[in-house]
Amino acid sequence: MLTISRDLYDKIVAHARKDHPDEACGVLAGPAGSDHPERFIPMENAERSPTFYRFDSTEQFKVWREMDDRDEEPVVIYHSHTATEAYPSRTDISYASEPNAHYVLVSTRDPDRAEFRSYRILDGQVDEEPVSVTE
Image (cartoon, rainbow, N blue to C red; front, side, top):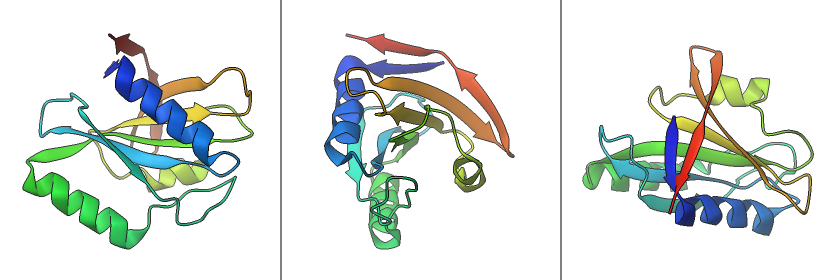
């Protein structure tokens, strides 16, 4: 189960809406081994595309190094889908390389409601998990 604060949940949804019609992407960092997301890190979608996202390699290197220096890890890796449901595509599954991360997808296809879902993705296996939003 992903447990996430209302503040971080709202920041992910706001980022997804702000970047629409392009996909948004980013990370929630937390203390290594804690499974507790604490720090919101919006990132640039290097593809600037409504159907695909990719972290900019220079920015990703910098963010991962900063997390390492702070004894953090990527607890959540998120991105948005702009016209489809919040379910990982084949490309999303193939790029999932953090075995302990929660992979969050937010669909912005409905302007009145954000679909927010979380998955564990390991060795090509996708398992949806519940999301608990805390105040």
